[in-house]
Image 1 (cartoon, rainbow, N blue to C red):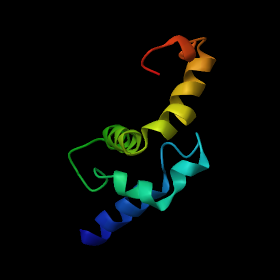
Image 2 (image 1 turned 60 degrees about the vertical axis):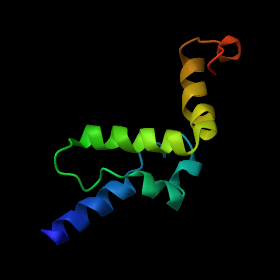
Image 3 (image 1 turned 60 degrees about the horizontal axis):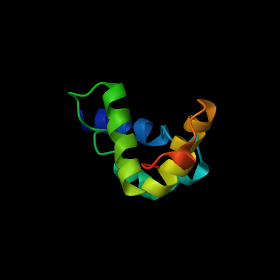
Image 4 (image 1 turned 90 degrees about the vertical axis):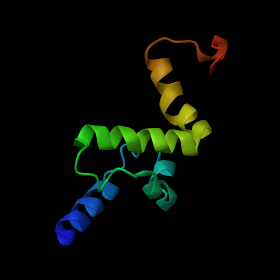
Length: 85
């Protein structure tokens, strides 16, 4: 069982869900944000969501620049006028 869990951890750690947005997200320090990787009661999507939320909380500026701003631009949202941006 431990070998299987180690294998799951290794697979999860290599598929960083924000890597496509910026190579900065692939830094080793963001692997620590994958806190749900070993939990068996979460689905794969739930584990990924927890990882993304943890990375966003760890570096909100990077998240805003690399994920939120491109999303807003693609969807015609003027982030400069948005107070929350």
